[in-house]
Image (cartoon, rainbow, N blue to C red; front, side, top):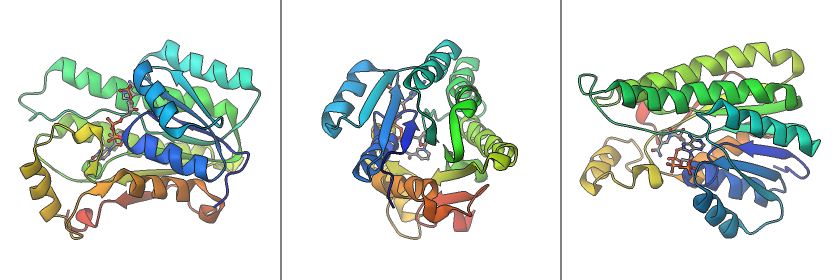
Length: 244
Ligand SMILES: NC(=O)c1ccc[n+]([C@@H]2O[C@H](COP(=O)([O-])OP(=O)(O)OC[C@H]3O[C@@H](n4cnc5c(N)ncnc54)[C@H](OP(=O)(O)O)[C@@H]3O)[C@@H](O)[C@H]2O)c1
């Protein structure tokens, strides 16, 4: 897979799955622009990648003004976007009974509204034949406890992807979903080891995922090798959704 001279945007590219995806794209020759809220985390990501091919932009995907700034940055560069990875997201675990309006709004503003309007504002900048990958989660098609609002945001992501795959097909733009299972990233730093072990035990491959394994799926779906794949939902979860 070769991404020489391809322009890639990854929202939430400063940590976890996004950062692993940046590394893989850069190794394959791409120019990559990443977003994130925290300037220190963006700087640390930039230092760890240490490549002139990586650019960063401090941008909160839940703020429409920040999304517009991202689109203006792309327009000012004069470059088309060949790959767009809509990855920025947060997770919060509450039962339906314990979910407050604030928790619900945070999840929806970042995972759904932010993703939707980032896609909308960048559609005019996508090249013919571009690839868009939306990061969902296995919980979008499962029924885990404590995940009601988060899972609902990810089901919304799946729905947005299906519509986008249909609407953008006449420009030969492919749109796909990657749905990770539990993956070892900063998002899960606070998850106690015994909970992680219990989750791993329920996975057919008997372990949780690594960010690089999710990145490989994102990069594959963005490549010419996936030229006839659009509208797909790719579970990258060690087989856990077999049992849903
Ligand atoms: N890890 C898992 O087990 C797992 C499983 C299934 C699905 N996923 C999904 O995979 C995606 C990446 O998760 P991850 O585990 O890599 O998370 P992570 O380690 O917490 O990293 C999240 C990235 O998104 C950025 N981000 C968060 N909110 C943002 C906002 N409002 N605007 C812009 N950037 C924002 C973060 O930077 P800042 O905090 O600086 O903004 C960071 O770069 C998410 O959509 C998540 O729902 C993760």
